[in-house]
Image (tube, rainbow, N blue to C red; front, side, top):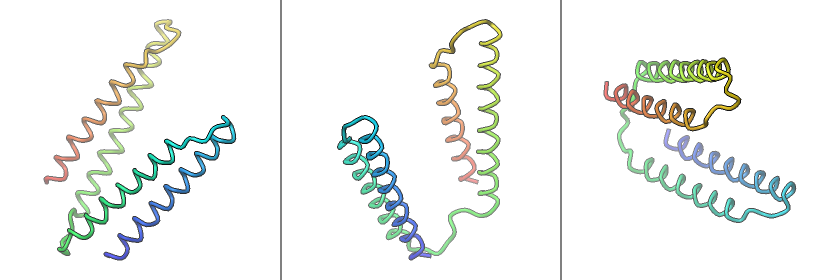
Length: 131
């Protein structure tokens, strides 16, 4: 299990580096300048990610499982239902704005919905994990 965690972190970091390189190359090809700040920020983020996970792997000495199957099932069900409810609310809101003859939807309402969704998912995730 320990070796598998290190392998997962390694492949995640390599995949992120490949993605950053492809993205920076596409920006260079289409816009004509190379985004050094994106590459440097990406490599810094990858370094922090790897450091965090290596510390987490080294500090976890027990063989106890953090969560059981019921907790994972409840967490997945909550995320699926929450995201579908958010999409339904957004579609209903946009259709309501369309019915009221608004030509554009103020983006602040969509941001408010997104932050409410993130807040609700965070609170319910904490509740599910504590059970």
